[in-house]
Image (cartoon, rainbow, N blue to C red; front, side):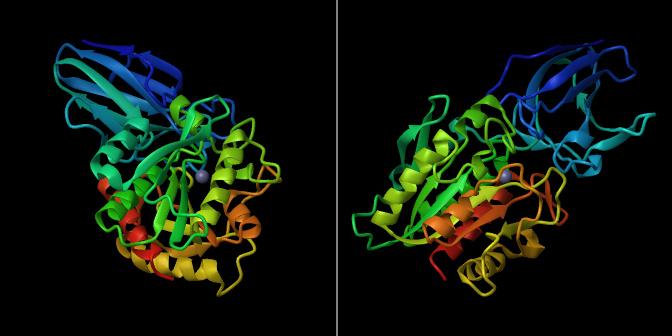
Length: 373
Ligand SMILES: [Zn+2]
């Protein structure tokens, strides 16, 4: 006997089309990623309560994968699960289920022992405000969190700093931003590792970092890529199209007057099934041999094997739904600061299944570069 109930909502909760088919040979939990009003979908996170009369399997069935951003291959989707002690762990790659009309689902079988289990499932390792609090507790006074404003929904928007600088700016500064697309949690884990490294070796440049640019989406469980009313990473025009970008633009102005600006880095994750490693997007108008290329070469060298993609330096060539600039364009064109985007895959980099420690190691390797160039 297996009884499955939908559990309570979680932080960054996202699921839809959720149903339990207890009469199947193996009981199945069907679900899909919720677009939350946006054009694209990818992120999911939810919990089920499973009562098992005797040891048995429960099958997870992710529907509509062909509608998720970059998710055509079940075998390149590696979600995470938390079932009892031990926290989150990676599931194996999905198995395909081809439907008679040609659509594809992805399947995972969970073997559960007798008893009651609370099973949480997410597209990737979650990272939210409680994880940030854990980081801040671990690094002590070396990183300070300040509220620089609020989100469009009125939630506090924190900025982290390793130094406040001073008017006139006599020390080097780096400005980091993560989670403009709120479902892209690998960006947060990379930032987490980077700040841990900065705390352990405080001789590098001062760091200011926005850990959750789209804080509303982080809390609400939005994927956030091309979310409405306006993609946060396309809202960097003058005037800005979102309150978060207005707040962060003013913080960046403050930063440029208190430091010698060296670099701006925007931390993202790519499409769902990208597995060829970490890579950098340069602004469209970055010149060959220019500052962004020098930084990108240094990052490629530092991130290195086994994480860096063969084709590490790229320019985004996919069509945008929004005519307005992104963060890196704003930093380069308006603020005159070299800027690039770092894309860290969700599940696998060149055959290596990524753990939280891998993401943090990538962040530590990025930190080694910040004092160079
Ligand atoms: Zn993104």
